[in-house]
Image 1: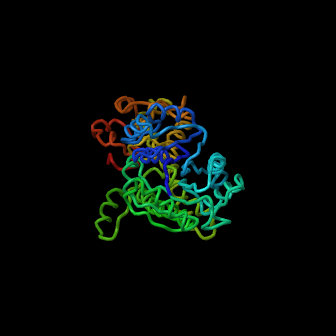
Image 2: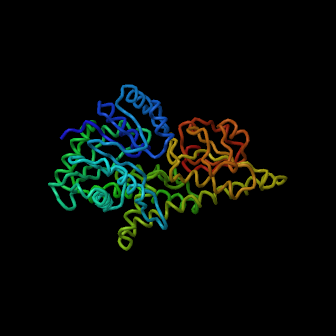
Image 3: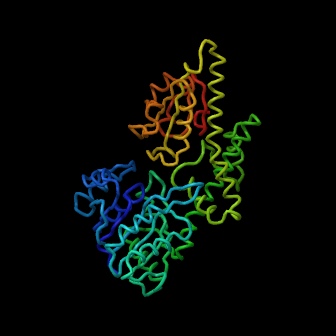
Amino acid sequence: MSFQTVSVVGLGYIGLPTAAVFAARKKKVIGVDVNPHAVETINLGKIHIVEPDLDMVVHAAVTEGYLRATTIAEPADAFLIAVPTPFKGDHEPDLSYIESASKSVAPVLKKGDLVILESTSPVGATEQMSAWLAEARPDLSFPQTHGEESDIRIAHCPERVLPGHVLRELIENDRIIGGMTSKCSAAAVQLYKTFVEGECIITDARTAEMCKLTENSFRDVNIAFANELSIICDKLDISVWELIRLANHHPRVNILQPGPGVGGHCIAVDPWFIVSKTPEQARLIRTAREVNDSKPQWVIDQVQQAIGKHLQANSEKTAKDVTVACFGLAFKPDIDDLRESPSKAITLKIANAHPGTVLAVEPNIDKLPANMEGKVTLCDIENALRRSDVIVLLVDHKQFKCISQNSLERAERVDTRGIWN
């Protein structure tokens, strides 16, 4: 099977790097996105997200004619769907983006094409995608009705990459290949071997879907243990950072570092996909989610206590005179991704409740999200340290690790990542 043209639907944090690595291997790549600004930016050889080295790869791919973006799907030999899967209602998975993407590519499908769902999805989403495609194209056959002899090959191949290292991990990491039939899996392996140097491991579509959810749920449970431990230690007047350092000297103990919560469009979301399908059985997974989802409020309470402590020491002041600086809005260090970020949510809640000035220090963005404008002031490190009475460390960006202790001494501190202790 020859894949001369690859279409990537969804040019975000996963789709654009994936399109770029295919193009770097001299495949003709058509990127599809509903965002005209993203399409225009990419066609100029630039990028609309922050990811190390991606700008150079995209620029080269566009300049050499291997990558082009559009808002409308065009014919290709393989289609990779990498669109968001957010929530609706009470943590119910919203598959509307996958449905829209499926219906957008359906008119241009032809016999022999491969369609891969890369979006992290609840179990059964790949079969649902195939059903949407079949409904739109009754002239073609699909695996759910024609098995190995289907006209169209369908697979689920979840990404497993770390923001900030996406290009390297796309190439080096092992890949789970979950085809709806063995021929579907074989076609997907052939496609990914265009650039994947890791092992392509074959399973069925449902297991591939569950594998990604399991990986992130495992991490979520471990983070929840650390976050709960930090709350317990605060109650008992123990340094959680010292405690974890000592406990990790045990040869079979590796406790993670606590934080302000869990963010991003993976760990903060994926466990709920398991809970939504098996609510009675996923008790530990649900509890871990609830622990991590409750941590931001605990941080906000710590900030309120810090404000109160500052006011006690400065009796001439009122709360309106107190400036709070929140360091970090991204969901993890050294990236610009604010999706599902507890740091962003914490900062916004502080701003909504605090009558004084709230500053945000986020070196990876140059503009605040729309829902923060008028409530929070984006500020650089030096000005924030000079102006603030309470400083809140939410993300351990590399720039924050370089701040001297002397610069921190004038303000009350809430350090959720332990880098200033």
